[in-house]
Image 1 (cartoon, one colour):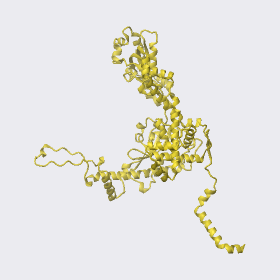
Image 2: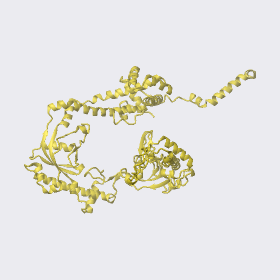
Image 3: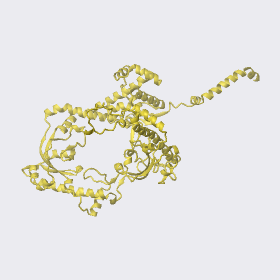
Image 4: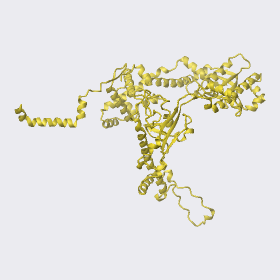
Length: 639
């Protein structure tokens, strides 16, 4: 053995040195080489086969190729067909949809894909260049595009069953083309409203208890169910104060100001102020008229003051986010070690709930980020979604840009402990779901560049009003409206009983009391259909009709007008309430205009076209819904 080592010691030494070098340079590579592969790890099953980690990786690459090739996400192609779009389509939906399209024979061959790409302005040369830049094979780009086209083709095919039957077309045509003519006297409650009337306390309490747990609607649909409310403390970084206290040298600022002016000479801030008109005394008649001046400053010396202001502002807009991010990091530190409870929210660490917590943390701001009056801390009163502009106007326009989405403060302010449950779905975004006392994890800003960090200090969950005193002013107003509505009903019934052979118009003109209160409330609207084409789909539940004086009525009102024509009363007059507008109407039926066969034949194609478009859009929307995709393909997640 010793003779062996002596004979081959140089060879063995070289071998071990090489092995050591390989381990040193490729440690992680060796680990991955000998580690079990995750590519085959099962993610999900479906009726179209198993889905593993490699399938998802390939789908992610294909989706990225589509985005790079066309400058937009693959889901946007589907949203062109369905204006409302299908939300939250992921790589898994890409896999399922592309497999479904392939099974149905909808995926086109490479030749058709190339033709389609040429038609939309993507040449073969552009495909080759992209393949080189992304280090993929050209066939991968064509395959990804082919899958996209297959999905689009199948989405079109899926909607062809939405075309209406002949019987359905006749019903739709009748709804739009059969009409009724009426005369109307519209008596809105506000005609009889007494803002100074005394209300008995017992009546107030009874009214409050009746509608305490109802959500408020329009007109006399009263309700005192309270939407969630929050009280917020926030720190505002003031860009103007930072600009006033910048510690940059004058020379540096002037250099930046000059550069900005040279590149932006025709910006509004460099426009000359308007000159005062010359007086008659200044006219000598001898001087030559001056050449017209440019509306903008022509020399930097003239524009220096405005340019310096811009330079200061721009520098301050770079400093403000740094200050806000420092606050976010400092406010978050105590929460890092806190463990969430069963509801997913973390209990507030010691000291964080102190009302002076923000001021205490901000007092340790580094010197390089400290500016006089640069940060102010404020605490709001309680506000709900609709009252934020009144209670906290400074926050009403605050937002944060997350990728291509702009989230407003009012969109995230109520994602708080005690109001919204913490999402438990795997991969759900919980960024904006905050425990009480926890600060926002990202700074927000307003249109002026001021930065904001906030925390929810108190919440009031949604629920019935706690007491009459909480909504007393609202209840008093509503009781008065109810009294006025009752008077509208009394007057309408009185008018109805007075209608004789002169019809509704004669009875109205003879009623001096109503003439004084409701002059001009008698109207003869154009013939009314059950549905109106200009308001969208024939299947709409509530087709709005305007009957003058701002009165809005739905399809239920119109149906009652048709029913009135079939009644045996003479004259055909009835009281029809419009509670959504706090209005009572007296309606006189004049005639029902039936749908004639020749009109039907002329309008049939239009009826089909409009209704088919709506039904096709609805069918596509349903077909592309993530839940619908997973359900019809028996998708089951295994993670």
